[in-house]
Image (cartoon, rainbow, N blue to C red; front, side, top):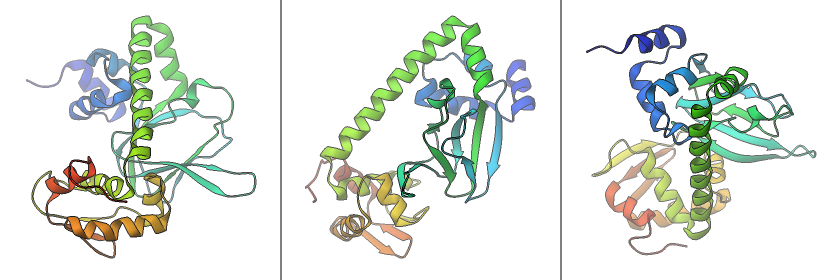
Length: 245
């Protein structure tokens, strides 16, 4: 059977196909929404491609859209009055950003930048809010989903404090692997300083952590990373075997 007629309409209008609608249903921000509610919420969205190096929105700019990453990596950052850039997060597939600022008429406290070529879902904030205002059930479900999403973010912060730098890096490398078992070779998607920022460590700490992972079957040659056993590295990242510094 083909997709329901309303989903055919959604694809023609926005570029969101049935598989991508399935994917959005798995994004924590939208968990709990019915498929029909999700299609309604996405009816004014669009799928867009951005080249690496593109600024998606600037700090102090009025936030106008919610984004979800389909492909690529995005840096969310804040510029201090002294001109120093603080990386808040480096995000990838399935991760949303801009979701909190669209509810605030004031300027966004953050900026966003496409680190690599990226394919993004862009949902106009004004229409997003209008759909929520017109449908109380949708509003309650989305509120519950956002609450659960914030809870998961808190858990991620807690993990950064209890896991060693080596475990954090091991987990990051495992998430880049296409398979969960056997050997793998991957390319780091962006420079190591950004990876360090994503993992909550200094660049020099990242280099030391990478060196320590040699004992767990990880070898590095430039941006290429060779992993002898992905499953074993994943177990290490979760604290199941040994402890690194």
